[in-house]
Amino acid sequence: MYSLQDLGWGPFFENHITDPSAGLFPARVAGHSRGIYRLLSASGDLTASVAGRLAHEAAQSAALPVVGDWILGRLASPGQAVIENVLERRTKLSRIAPGERTEEQILATNVDVVFLVTSLTREFKPRRIERYLVQIWESGARPVIVLNKEDLVESPDEFLRQAEETPLIDVLLTSATTGSGIERLRGRLGAGETAVFVGSSGVGKSSIINRLLGDTVQAVRAVRAGDDRGRHTTAAREMFLLPAGGVIIDTPGLRELQVLADPSTLGQTFPDVDKLAANCAFRDCMHVSEPGCAVKAAVEDGTLDGARLRGYRKLQRELDYAKRRTDRSSQLAEKRKWKQIQKQYRRRCRERER
Ligand SMILES: Nc1nc2c(ncn2[C@@H]2O[C@H](COP(=O)(O)OP(=O)(O)OP(=O)(O)O)[C@@H](O)[C@H]2O)c(=O)[nH]1
Ligand SMILES: [Mg+2]
Ligand SMILES: [Zn+2]
Image (cartoon, rainbow, N blue to C red):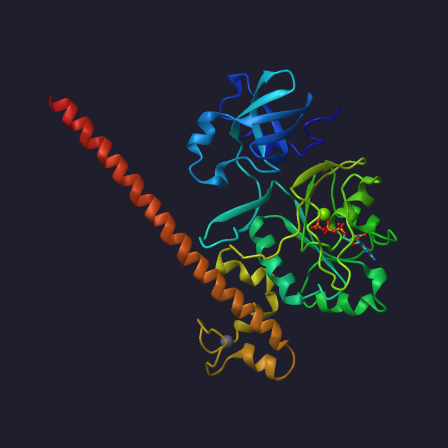
């Protein structure tokens, strides 16, 4: 049996319970499949469904419970609960859901650390790491880059150097096969903290988690022969408790990461570009062809990698575009809401006149 603290509970959530007298208990969402939720609570594991009212009110899917959430539930029968409320999220890792529309998809909530796993194969791409970093900084959690499968390469330090091009970032070399670096990784997670593992399929997320759990709990499958792409072995997000404390969430490999973040946060992933930009002649310099651009000058004299600047500018364009799209859809939602309120108001006036 575990305590709420073992599950990551703390004052933040305590303070967000507005009506403690309603006979509801807190629990954490550990898994979810086709409308059935798996919960961890102080009185054990439960299966649960979402209360009709919550499902109805959750006009946007982002308001429905996801793995990592703290919820308030009501016991329906032994081992079976109904989720009445989702408590405010302390942190939230999102992306733009695959598809045509600019819609948020939440990957995990209430996490302290995001382990961004990449493998030292053709999978390793600094530009992809930057994309993830932007999204992780936006989440409110702290990033740790995990360079896995170090047993496969001659000089892993070469990769380490490339990953550390992002200033001040925490980078670890690991091998889930030999166990090297796993203890150090374990040390990045404090007591009562929650971590989520993200990255492409086949990089070894579940293998590292199995090492941490000291058991083969998560299914792992060989990468395809010929290329090193994964087979999407992990099918759904799932939460585990580490034997020595700490909570971890495994996620299925992502094919793409469409970023959804405030453009003004880009500087956290690119502090080097930001610092240089302070010396550009124009305050709103886009570092393309403006005169007196300190960023372009740094690329020319070799202090800044040109590919890194191109990655920065691409992300900047994407974030600006996504922001315009989401601003517009929230404007539309706001308009609809006001129309509804005006309609109700007019109806009430008419009723009073009768
Ligand atoms: N050589 C080597 N192979 C590894 C290492 N870590 C994982 N693998 C292998 O890589 C393959 C994929 O590992 P998984 O742990 O399933 O990868 P994953 O990231 O969970 O993949 P998805 O669940 O599809 O997202 C398996 O064959 C593992 O045995 C490592 O450190 N070194
Ligand atoms: Mg997996
Ligand atoms: Zn500039």
